[in-house]
Image (cartoon, rainbow, N blue to C red; front, top):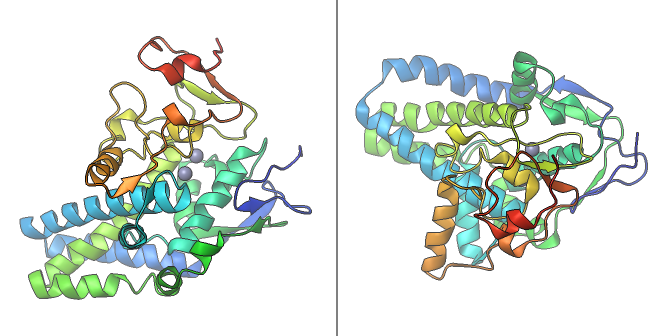
Length: 317
Ligand SMILES: [Zn+2]
Ligand SMILES: [Zn+2]
C-alpha cells in the first residue's frame, strides 16, 4: 500500500488503512430503511391521494435541495460558502430531515468515503465496486469497520455547537415533529407520503446516485493517482439538485457550484445564488476562485473555450 494521505478531518495516523476491513450488518440502519420502505410501499398504495403525493414531492425537494445538498454537503461538510449561523442551522436541520444521519454522522460518512477514494487503493465499500446488488445491501443495510481506522476530528465550532449536539443525539426522532404537523394538516396519508415514502425514496435515491456516479463512463475532468473517479450523470442533474454532477465535485470539492460545465442546471447553486441576492450568503467558492485539485487533468474535451478555468487546466489526450 502506498502512503496513506490525510484529508482535512481524517488523519492517516499510525497504521490507518482504507483497504482492509469488514462490512457488517448494521441492525439500526437496516431496520430504519426497511421499515420506511415497507410502510411506504404498502401504506403508500393504500393511502394514495394527489395532495399526499404533492406533499411528498415538495418536502423531498425542500429537504434534499436546501437540506442535504446545500446545508449538509456544500455548507457543513465543504464550507463552500459562508452564511449566518441561524441559517446554517436551519439548512442543516432540513438535511437531518432527509433521514440519513445527524450533522456529525453525515460529516463522518462523507469524509471517510472521501478519504478512502483519495488514496491509491481503497475498500470496494468506499469505491462502490462490489456490484449493484451487493453495493445496495452494503450501503443501505451495513457499515464498514476498518482494521486500522484513521483519526477523525470535527472542527471545534461544529463539534461543540449545542444545536448540532442535540440533533445529532436525536436525528431519528426529528421525523416526529414533522409527522405530527403532517397528521394535523392532512391525516395519515400525508404522514405516510411525507415521511415514510419520502425517507425511503431519498435514501435509496441517494445510494443509486452514489453508485452510478462512481461507475466508469465518459469523463472530462480526471483526477490522477486516486483509487476512485467521480462521473457526471447529466440526466439526473435536475432531480438531484446538482448532486449528480459528481465528476465536477471530485475535481473541485469545495466549489459551491456543482453544475460548472455548459448546460448543467444546478438547482442547489440557484438556491445559493438567490440567498446571496438577499445578502444572506457570502464568500462563495467556485472554480474561478479555487485552486484546481492536485492531479486534475482535462480529458476528451471538445469545447474548452467557454470557460477560463477549464482552459487553464492541464490537458491529457
Ligand atoms: Zn465520489
Ligand atoms: Zn462532497
